[in-house]
Every structure is written in C-alpha cells, then in structure tokens.
Image 1 (cartoon, rainbow, N blue to C red):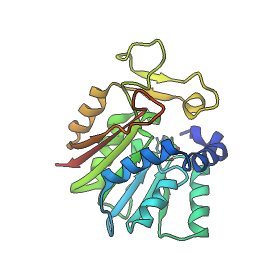
Image 2 (image 1 turned 120 degrees about the horizontal axis):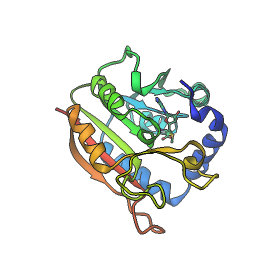
Image 3 (image 1 turned 180 degrees about the vertical axis):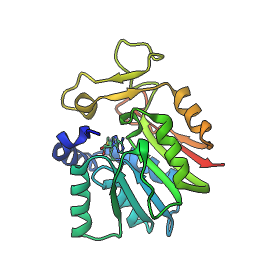
Length: 219
Ligand SMILES: C[S@@+](CC[C@H](N)C(=O)[O-])C[C@H]1O[C@@H](n2cnc3c(N)ncnc32)[C@H](O)[C@@H]1O
C-alpha cells in the first residue's frame, strides 16, 4: 500500500519535534500520559508509531515498546534515533489494517496516537488491536476530535475522506477520514474494547477540544 507520510516524512518529523516544545502539545501529551498511568515493565505496542517520538517517551518510562507503521521513511527516522540512543524499541513495517503477527504478542497495552483518522478501515484495525492484547489489556487512542475537527460546511453525519484547506498542516497534506463519535465508540465495543476513560484536553487558545483521548480495556 502507498504510505502518504513517505512523501512528507522529513517535514512531519521536523514539525513534530518543533511542536513538542509548544504549550498546546505539552497539554495534550500530559493528558496522554495521565491516561497511560504507570507502565513500567509493561509490553506495549505503538500502532502507527510514525518516527517514534512518543514510543521513545513511553520507553523512557520503563516499558518495552514495539512500534509498527506503514511509512518506511518515518520508520527509518525512528530506527536512526534508536541507533543513536538505544531504548530497546523494535520497529516493524506493517499495515494496521492487516497486521502481521508480531513475535512480542500478546501485549499489556496498545496505543494509537493521532492515526486512526489516517486509516480507512477502522473495523479491521481495531480487530487487529484486540488480537494484539491479552485479556484485560488496555488500548488508548488519541484522535482529532470527531465532533469539532470536521470538514468545513459539511454535515457531522457525513463520514468519509476529507482534506483540510490548510496546505501547511498535516490534514491539508494527507487528509483524514471523518467518522462520528458513535462510529468510533461502536467500533471499539464491537471488538470487545470497553470504554474506561476519556479526556478532552483544554487548550487556552481554543473554545473546543481539538483532540479526544479514549482509554479502553479488552473484556
Ligand atoms: C499523524 S501521524 C502520527 C504518528 C505518531 N503516532 C505520532 O504520534 O507522531 C499518522 C501515522 O499513521 C501512519 N499510518 C497511516 N496509515 C497506516 C496504516 N494503515 N498502518 C500503519 N500505520 C499507518 C502514518 O504512516 C503516520 O506515521
């Protein structure tokens, strides 16, 4: 399959590194780690890990991390960082919609940060997540908020691929799949991922939350 992020890998990597220093990303990052809790010694899969920025932060908290992504170019950057400063992270090339069997399965937890919108087949992806987890394992997804980050002028109920009109942003360059909140929650429930907690980090310069975080447990 084609990997949209291969075409923007260097730009995306630079953007993520720069944004990590900004207040808004710090707030969202804190919300993610609050949902994550204590993960020392846990075996964790970062699904759609990109260039491994978050995988490295999770590994630094004492977890054994495996990253999977479809973009070879982002994985090259991730492996380069791992080589420069080893944290024991293993990276695999793979499509979240048809995950290869990973030798590290089953995992204590899986997270997918800001990527479910990039992936067309949500049901297949969540089926794969459920397979990766042992019973009682956790899943955290951070997504662009489905109620507020929607195609301008379009009905919330109209699902499908769209591209933001900001050519300098991620969603202007690679687009996103809009789904309703109900679609996300029902898709999670249908593979036995039961809602435990959510978070909508509030940013000082926004009147609505741009990101929704969801924590589930495999029943
Ligand atoms: C917005 S980036 C997020 C990357 C990373 N999780 C982060 O927090 O920076 C979306 C990621 O999803 C990956 N991706 C898109 N479709 C995928 C698929 N079908 N399987 C695996 N990864 C995919 C992209 O290559 C990209 O790395």
